[in-house]
Image 1 (cartoon, rainbow, N blue to C red):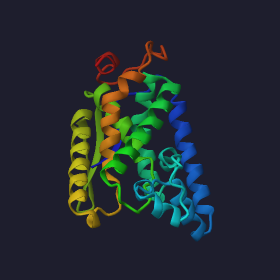
Image 2: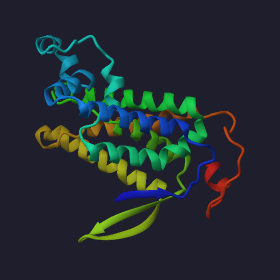
Image 3: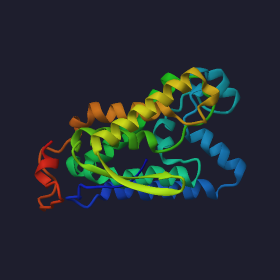
Length: 244
């Protein structure tokens, strides 16, 4: 199921979300502008390579400082390819504006970054011997999804499901869609733990860790007052969705 949009309009201009999307695009453009060998080195230096921290001797032999923890922050601004980038930014575009509404721009940015760090830590704990660099914003975006799951469960998410090249469009409650997404990520994470070679290079535990962080920690970042006073309504009514 591919999300197309949600039914909750933004109250405020999502400046933080726009900034994150722009920064991710610029970082990817710079990454791909590098020569292939230099780009590979760049990804290993600024992505999370778990074995770099679990086996420092190996890291030093490979020229990767084992005492450099910046990759837990920088990894979320690198991506493997254009579909990887577009998928993450599209999901952030759909769900991020409403979470930013409830937090305000500054709190939202801090929440996003800490969610990405928590996601990277979860992947490291669950796969400490992995030698493949972990890159991408999906862990931080998963934290946004965890917050959205709690804040807007009765919103609806319009999705498309292709069957034999024919697209079927339907709307699901946000809680249903996001619960299905989380369970699918958890199932894939457990399969990857049982058969690491078949995980396809996807950091499933980062998705799980980011979502759990968003679900558990989002209340710490909510603004005490609504950042914007502008009234807006959809077919479900702002008060019903907002006051969950």
